[in-house]
Structures are given as structure tokens and as C-alpha cells.
Amino acid sequence: MGHEAAAAKLAVEAVLPGIYFESAPQNATAPYKVCRMRSPGRDSQVIAGKRAMASPLVDVGIWVEWDPCSAVAQAGAKEIDEAMESLRSYRVTDANGDGWEVSSMREAMLLHEEVDTKSGSGKKFYWVGGSYRLSISAV
Image (cartoon, rainbow, N blue to C red; front, top):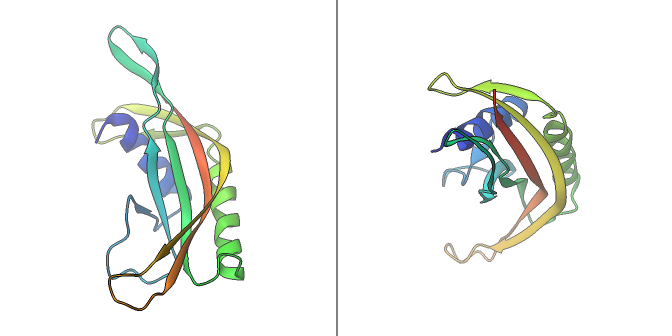
């Protein structure tokens, strides 16, 4: 995991405790929240051969069963928006002791449907939330 990815994970975990990254464990029970990196973005500033700023795009949402417009889905999406909005200038320190400043801006809503074909139940699951552009800068 790159330094920027670690900074993103630390910041999102701080504002959305209990969120899973990339995927939830198989035994997770809906509803639960997941953050996935959709695009690593690009290194927008390099100083002396070292990345100083990156801008990944992450999808953050709540997985719910059957109804993406349920009260649970809508409350979860609202909580995610408010939490990600709070990342205006959030500072984290990674495992190597490097400091990062993380901010977030919502780019789009997120609604994704999946059908359980493995168990044969045909149960529908929806991922409801948003896509957020993170700005991650070395400090």
C-alpha cells in the first residue's frame, strides 16, 4: 500500500469508524459501509523526485438488501456524505511517521446493484453513497 493510500484509509476510518476497505468479510451482515478506490488519480505535484500530492477517486457507500431507497440506505448515505464532507483539511500520520493532509470533495452519487448468484437466493444488494475525490498532500 502506498503512502497516499494509507493516508486515505486512515482519514476515512477516522470519520467513518468500522468501515471496510475494498471489500467486506464474507460473514458481514448488511447494512455495512465499504470504501473502494476507483482510480488512483495522478501525482499532481512531484518535488525532488518525491510525490507531494495525489488525487485518488474513492467510492464510499453502504450495502443494503432489497431497497436502495429504504430509510436505512438513505440514513447511511447521509452519514457518509456528512463524514466525507468533514474531511476538509484532515491530518494523519502513516506507519512510517510521514504526515499527510487529506481533503475530500464529492463528485457524484453512487448507486450500484448486485444480485446474489452464488447462494441461489437471487437476493438483491445495493451500494448507496457517493464518489469522492481526495486530495492528499505531504506535510
